[in-house]
Length: 123
Ligand code: SF4
Image 1 (cartoon, rainbow, N blue to C red):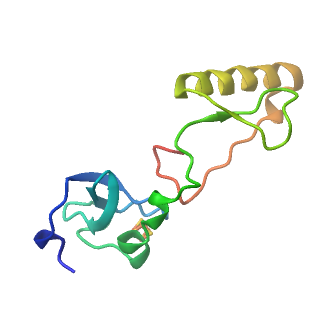
Image 2: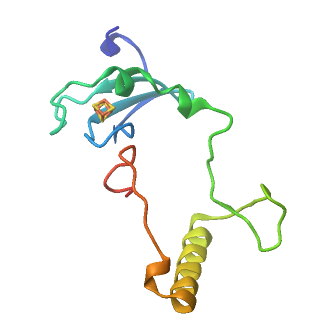
């Protein structure tokens, strides 16, 4: 399928989130949804190519279960109960809690986890 013959509302350059290669992709949207992906010709890691996952596995962007806003679980809240928060509030909350844990238990009480499915910027 050639994406050049199809009409899209917008095309946004992005980085594939499926693995650590970091292929540069063009996300084509219509009606506010991703409807096609093509590899970016100028991608320094992929030089105009993309594997089948990066090229075609974009259905998850339309999942009704996809989180679109940060969620915070309040102390004492029932398991699985969260409230929506702004990104500023969420980042401030994480910062405050990390400092609290470090102060109470020392720096070895904190660990980080990165994923090959995250971009360098996400990590
Ligand atoms: S397109 Fe394929 S090889 Fe490239 S980053 Fe995505 S999953 Fe990895």
